[in-house]
Length: 441
Image (cartoon, rainbow, N blue to C red; front, side, top):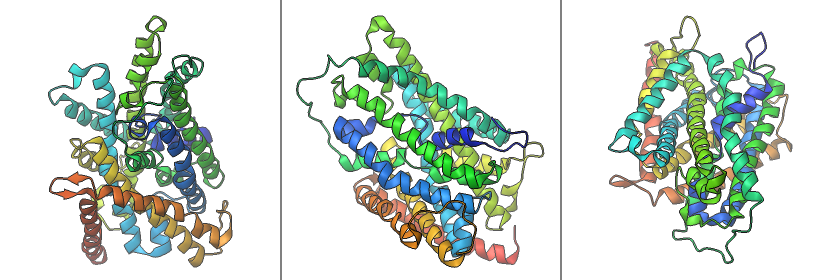
């Protein structure tokens, strides 16, 4: 999986990006239940063009031009100064608190569909805590240990879907004669779930210093990962749509139920359901593990720059992993395990989406400030192209703001809660910058 030099090569990087972004078709069930089959397929085809592809092109240019540990934090810091570098890291880290709670939630959801007694009576929360703890310990073992498993996990989690899609695609006789009306139409909610499912391309940038020939590898990895994500999202849903299965029966963590519904029992429907459940849990663990590797580098890089206590930059003497940052991040992620899937997605897309817009701004600012910087890959179209690729992601983020206004979080809505978290980033910058200038660690 790696050269003798220990650098991550193309295929493992594609697999790692796939896990950071997708982790399989898991999490798409809510798009079908909110939008129907036709709506879900259209959303899953249009979202990568409007959201994923522009982001992947931006990452390809910046990661190949500045292949340093810290990734997007370094991009914003270098192009727009320490304030915006801090805000970029703040939004990503705060967004990660909600994002990283999603994968244990999905893990418990799939396990609960298969064996409800295992997750009943509050045990699901503790299973999620244990999953975060295991991934934290796994990451302390080093990036090489984490990265080496990504390719194998990706293949294993996708195999059951290849079987399901293959069978469903050739058994259309059960298709319903008339379209089945949806009970709860929520197109904006479906788009937001799709945005979350196509989000995370920039996370691979934080390990750029450990990638073999990053100037060449990142653009190829982005192209390969975008294609793989879109393919593995659309094909299974499109194949199941041909069987006429009621879209209202889809729910979070419900792929195993879909397999039971369309696969004849005599042909091993329960076996396939179990395989999909295991694949869902593998996808959740793999994504959580890969993102722990990526996100834990942020507080370590900020600690190196003096924004955070130096203890967060401590590295394991044998593996080099920032073990204190890993443990602190894991504790923060565990705090949000009691949030619903929808609330987690809404807040994650809002905060992480804003951080992605800052990355688009970094792309433009770096073009202005450092026009002679070697760029092995450039977003086509010159300055107009660099400006233009951020327009559609901005439009989708406006939809996020509209949808968050209707989602309650305690006594306030998700938009107000998100605004408070964003404002705290400005406050913490001025406090941390004072310590930084004073040399306090």
